[in-house]
Amino acid sequence: MGRGRTRRRLRERATPFFLLLPALALLIAVAGFPLVGAARISLLQLRLNTPERFVGVENYRRLLTDPQILQSLGITAVFVLGSVAAAVVLAYLLALLLYQDFPGRRVVRTLVLIPWTLAPVVNGIMWKSLYAPNFGPLNDVLNRVGLLSQSISWLVDYPMASLILAYVWKVLPFPTLIILAGLESIPLELYEAAEMDGAGSLTRFKRITLPLQRTVTLLTVILMLVDALHAFAVVDILTRGGPADRTLVLNYAIFRTAFRYLDFGYGAAMAFALTALVLVLTFLYLRAQSEAVLATGR
Amino acid sequence: MRRIRRALKLVWIYAAVAVVLVWALFPVFWIAGSSIRPQYEIVATPLRYLPQTITLQSYRIAFTDPAFLRALRNTVTVASLTTILALAAGALAAYAFARFEFAFKRPLFLSVFLVRMIPAFTLAIPLFVTMRRYGLIDTIAALVLTHTTLVLPVSILIMRTFFETLPPAYEEAAMVDGATRLQAMTRIVLPLSTPALMVVAVLSMISSWNDYLFGLLFTLSKARTLMVAIADVEGAFYVDYPLIVARGMIALIPPVVAALVFQRYLVRGLAGGAMTQ
Image 1 (spheres, each protein chain N blue to C red):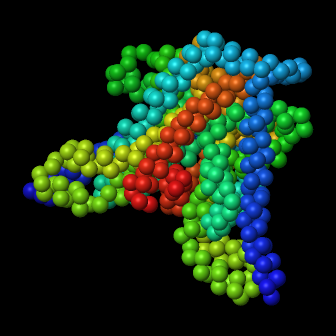
Image 2 (tube, rainbow over the protein chains, first blue to last red):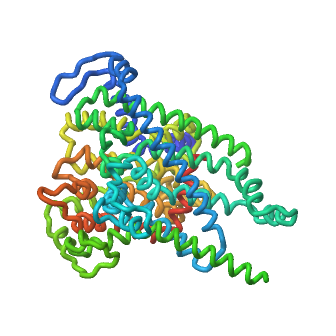
Image 3 (cartoon, helix red, strand yellow):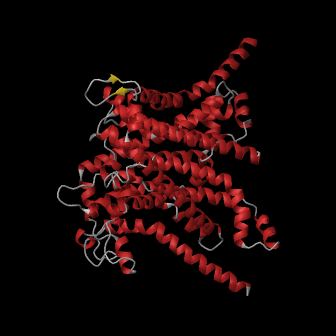
């Protein structure tokens, strides 16, 4: 009896590891192992069909002196910050609208999710046809209302703005949903009390909504920054980093170096630079989150 | 007076709603319309917003193109296998995190979360080099393993959060009656967790279906996926817009329908999944 119980307890202690085994095996094989592999490759000169050669930190030295990297970082900053700023402002407006009580609200709330479910590739193809210079609806509408007098080649003349618009259109439902969930968790009594004290709607928004939403907004912003840093399909379909590298965000520069110029060693070093950026953001995310947990006691 | 103010407010709200709906739906409406028009109508001036002639020609071309059909079949296979694997491996791991205390639990959970943050190319470069060496390039397996791994962190997170809301008393009672851990989990916990399993299934299916990057890098022709096939738009002589957007529509419909049908589950699951807790 005593032995049976010990055996049972032993088995119970081993159980979680058996349960974790399939997931961990996958995560180690497809994420952990490659991560180490990427570190190794970044120290090699590795091109397709030529023998690999250990070059130490040469790729990283090149990274620091490569003018194209500096340019790419600037482009990335414009794309990422522009997208996230636009998305957060628009998401707030949209969430405030969907927060209102009106007949048909549920249908509208469902319909605005559609952009989010589109594949990035489909989104790219779609915006390419909307931006088409001669027979695209964007030019047509702007011409009809008199804002334009000739057609614009959007992806050539305003590639960055066009890219940001297409990207923001698709991701917008995500921050909207999170902000909306946050708005609905604020007790109505707070607003009613403030209204009784004579606070206008703008004051109520500034004094109640924004402070209470601070952490939620911060977490959303960080998640979106990470997502924007990873944008790939939309760039590949709409601009391919061009024209003349004007939309060559870091993620796309990595793709080109590794899979078009087949310079894997340097590509891996660039990928690590991006990983470092993302890790800093992740650290900020986790810190903001633990602060939120402390503040709400959850 | 108050009723007038309220009515006026509704007018403003509906005006704003109209703008929002045009913003969210017009682009999709535009490609849907273009996909059922003949090419000459799309390039005609002045531009018309409603199709004058409706034709399913582009869809017919798409569905009779063997390369496109193969890509469609590959994507269905990869997305289904990814969903099954992510559910199975994810549920087991989530259950371990929800119900057991063990060494390195917190750091282990944190590193699972971190996997989600690693940039795709940091993994894609070494994976490509390794897969090329072992002949895994252009296989369904390469994509299934990659897609499953990448969706696992969110899956584990969502299911763990849900499992923790269930009282452990049911399983304990079943185990007193002689059920094993695994039986208690599959017979009691999983049936009660349908909403969470649904979220994970829809999420895995959509993320695998929509993937472009790994499909582009890891396949050539045999295992080529739908997204890679439709992104390849440069024709030899001219660009067939209706065909391009018709193929886009075919790729668009399954995830959009799945997301709308399971919308309520998804929204709740994702709002929870956005936080690591």
